[in-house]
Length: 282
Image 1: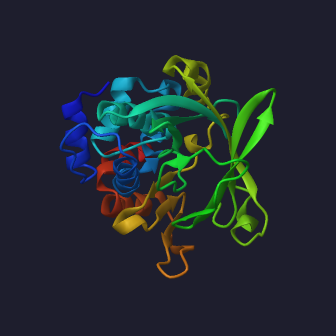
Image 2: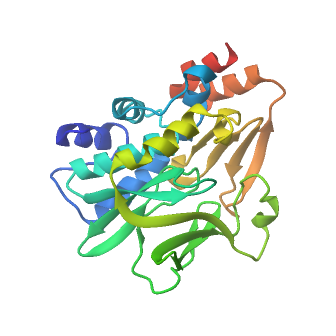
């Protein structure tokens, strides 16, 4: 999907990370992951810009074009790209599947470095600013990245080992407003760490991208980016949130009255998405 030179150019031009030779160190991987969150948005604009009857699973070339341009996209676009991007730089990586709402509706990446395995996810809309080691016994440490507090746990399911992602403070999914102050943990997704070929996802992703019943992003406008050192900037429907630099909570900065105002805000904050956003109005 990507040549080594294309990967180096993307790292330099979009992520602002210098890569001088093929390297598969954990420190470089974490630098790339963090830079991805800073510069490539998770967003539903490009999906909604396509008429509903023409929406479908992106091809590899389409995913490549969207991320190389800096426009980003949903999980399949950005996480599929992330696997091939890191692979081109010399990392040992594979696709793995995860289930958020329905079975296998989220694609992720697993990397192996010095005989240790790490989860990579740059495409859920939630911050995961580093590769997550999965060599913990029962539960991982608690992570605090940007506005989100989260951790991972292991669980046997149908004689297979699953990894459960759990959210606490900062989870903003529908129906989880109370989770921002709750002392309880909420299951965010169930991850199957078994490596998969990309074709494994064809049936689930085809349905998700073509059916508005299977993906909230067909109707809910989302753009999520973490510029300026990982400070969250979230456009969710008619609300614009920014991360408070002291409390790290998401604070509503604007509420829009009409879609034209939203488009103008996109032009200011996310200019690479402006042309696609205008198609939603049309």
